[in-house]
Length: 110
Length: 123
Image (cartoon, rainbow over all chains, first blue to last red; front, side, top):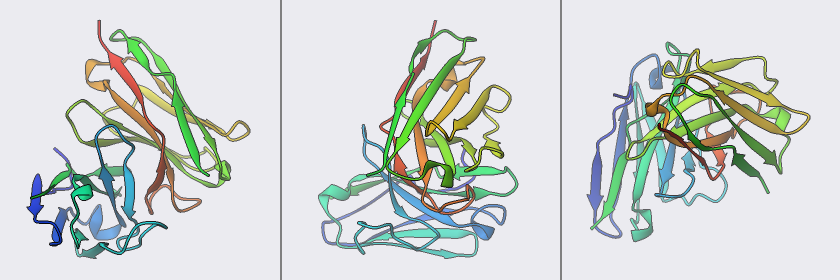
């Protein structure tokens, strides 16, 4: 059971928007930076968002991140079939003195 | 371009040891904290351990504390994970990952990952 809670799955039609929540506590998201990853089976995970809302070079602006209190959110607009993947949030946990990942959210494009 | 190449995975019996390595290139290795992240079959990503850019600070997940040891050789641009007293639940693909922000392991994110090396613990 992860200290970061994500919904198991979300879905939407092509072109629509989805949001994925990541709920934590003051020891992790509340006082540290969140990051988000896309993971396709058999491949290495890809960093989408870091420091709550920054995009690495090459990540389209269809992907956005935000944080409020002890929760972080990933938004994906203009949903494409290629966005079908598992998405994970992560952050540092000051009580555990380590990084923690959420349980992952499977995005399905209907 | 940044490359991280893991090696050393394989099949090992419970209770035995294994060392996996991660050869880094394409960036100034001694400026960045490094991590190992694993994914067990059918499970999500699990952070395992981190090491600071200079190697003087290490951080471990409770699940591996006391059994795993991370180290780095900045002269060889290589990261290591020594795994002792292996258990069936350690079976996973192990990824090495680089921090996007230099000189930290507590913020930012993992901007480059290796292809992963499979460790199977089984009798």
